[in-house]
Image (tube, one colour):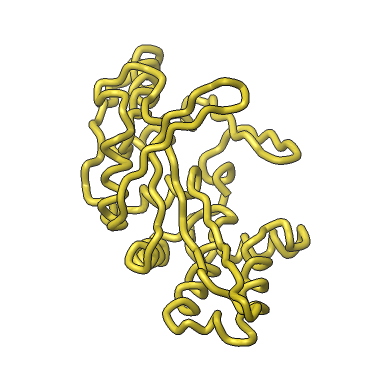
Length: 243
């Protein structure tokens, strides 16, 4: 759908696809769509593209600043979570074999610093802190040493309580995810209801949780079913013109 409405060349691999946009009118369209709507130090890359475009095509596109509006004001966070967010569903069992300690949450992490100098600074602290405040959860600091010897410093936000999950799901109902991750939102809503009513502790709770776990995994669906469900989701929530 993105290619149909913006253009570009789509390269499809086994586990990923890449959309490459090079034509002048298509590059201009992308610039117009995101200029003034970015919230992270990655705005440096956009400004670099605009400067290149202006110099090559005698353009006068302004370098708009970061969007500092509230998170809930627009769909930016939805796109951010679509790209870097992960949804989790886990639980334990008590001595009777019944589910307990139900955990369902979104986790999003970002490296602490952008890799290039930027007019807005290189730290991701501001946007990650803004997300943590929006979800009413603490901002976590991660320091991991990978097997390769690389030290990974990052910020992490996790919707670890009822208020955070309710805020998240209310937001994603208003601003739906674009990718296959939308299935996880449906599952998270059901988990929220099970948690509030504590129905997951009932004798059929284990069966219901396992069904939700299967439902959230995109790979469990046949390809034709995946395409049909995703198309229905896209055309329902993103009724943009088709070329």
